View (cartoon, rainbow, N blue to C red):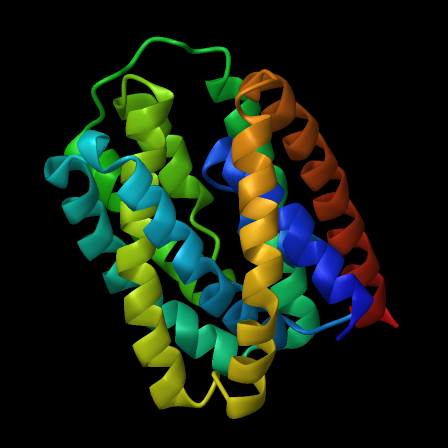
Length: 244
């Protein structure tokens, strides 16, 4: 099995165990330097489903149907155009879009960390965030705009982790069906993903253990800054490829 792939999964799910999200950003950012988006996204999807299920079970008492169900439906609505772009889009352009998305999400997350008070969000904001998140999920499996919304509407880390992973779980199941029908998930992708699940479980366990001994805010800031730098690198390198 490819060493970079194994390390990428391990690091991604250590972060997932600590923060409850960002595994796709970590995995996608590392793998985008030597693989196309259409080959990265389905692996991340199949490996990520068990992690979301486990975290939903762990935080089940904090899951709120009124939070995750509306967002899940909006995300599903956005996934369909996202999958179409993934299937037919130019690889370099998709990587540039991913790079820009990572930068924007990083800036938003850093700003959100300074706002500790829970805010009531508008229905319009809910709709916009849901659709954008759906398109990004269809393309890259990225649900970080959901993180921006749920992070402002939940009262503690348990509620945050439970609800964000509940949305991820719903959209994961929908995307598996859609990716299978569209031919994005192949038998080779499925076998590779199944081999990586033990690595994912190790990373998730390490992350959960780390979350008990280190400040989550510190980890988030380090991860987001690194991802933003990676996003800049992806945008520049793929822009040069297009120009060349």
